[in-house]
Length: 442
Image 1 (spheres, rainbow, N blue to C red):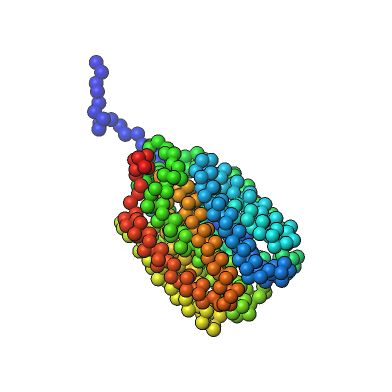
Image 2: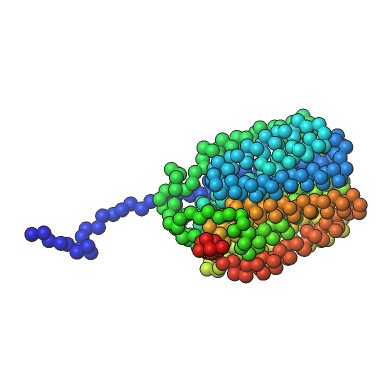
């Protein structure tokens, strides 16, 4: 006769618990380095503007046109790469983008005319456009919702880390070997990141360095798309039918151009207003971008901390973004400040607020959409941001050519964030995630 022993009386076998690894933060560090490289390549033109203008005979309008074509390619590529990355995955998509922009960066050192420089800049814009769709999709794959803003803030700090490094490296190389050597050497050295990316990046479920405990933690968030739900193929046309897509795109369209302003025109503003040159740009620019780095991390940490305390994503994100919008407004006075370091503090505060704003704005696609659509939504928003940058670039060139004053430009810079937070709140009053059923039915 067989005696059945009740489960509660059966001996319990201890099952060893998996150690919670933290490989996701190594991935975040890779993303941070890549964004830093991106912005070294991107800011070099601003640092070298006086040198290039003297050798290639640029006017203010010529410079604005070169920046315009970079942003035009960026807009086209952002939309395209967003779709490519959703199809082929982050690992292959980011490697493709990085290869293109590294080759284009080296190509800058081989040009001889303004037109050729604009062509190299166009190619750079195409390659660099894959950076943020890849990074944000990687964050959506590797982090639960409550950590995404912090992870985004950390990798987004690379947008300020790059400009910190650039005034140190580029003038030194240029003064020693010329501006061509600066472009070529930076392009060659940064190609090593591509090797590290291909070797180290996999999806969490496929990665040998991720423990079952960390994988379970990463996959614990089902606020946007439930675990086990079948993948959803989503077209651009469908995504454009959602107010949530337009909220993100509007935020990018209105505020991305302000970061372009700091990146491409801040050295020129400091040179014309305070007499700085290639040898003296360094300390003020580094100070501005150190503040921007701090803002990026604090902005992501702030909303993530609020969510861990139990506040909704809606309250956490929008409260942080409103504070950032208010912190930018003092920049409208920058044109009238005679003290260099006071204006550095004002612009640094605005740059920090922008980065904190961006760390939260860029989490919205992963807050609101299924993972299969995140890169595509980011691509739409990135295209909108680049189009806004194109308009701002044309405006900047005209204002400086005709009025020779940054004041009208700073007025725009100080007001756009307040407009943007109103528009975002109007389009997404509660930041409610888009249900898969709505996408299928749309």
